[in-house]
Image (cartoon, rainbow, N blue to C red; front, side, top):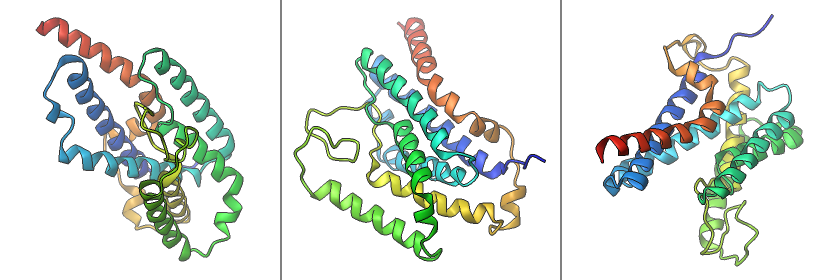
Length: 232
């Protein structure tokens, strides 16, 4: 019998996706239609961007506890990410290591090393992940490494550019923290309402997160061009 999906996880992912799409649409309005800069660059969105990135990446880690093969899942996601890199390179807005690259590599990494992480005492795992997040943030911000080949990990030169950028440090450990949460979700340790929670629209969006991520920017760009034609 097929297990029923947990609506609250899909709903949270769906909310993160909707806000991501809205955020990217505001960027398109600023970049291509000359909308005010504050519409995209402002303190509120600067904070929310990272809040919902944590939610999205952490939930991917949670989902890894329910996957039959994280390596296979990661290879598929990474292949899609590399295809997007190729397309965006020709569009002069290259994505070298965006969120899909991060998730693909993280899934493969976890698929290979999951036994090691599962051997860590349960109470120690979240403390270790938070410590590694803090240490990696300090490392990439305060340790200077002049290399053109470490942008995947968070070190890059002044001429580096990626239209979407989520390096392994510290985001891998956000993903791994999600796998710890996923263990408790799968074992039924969370409150009962978490498993019975239901809300319209957002769960459906969350279940189509990958497809929406792939197609949303071309659609938004077309919509932006259409708005420009109407207004100007």
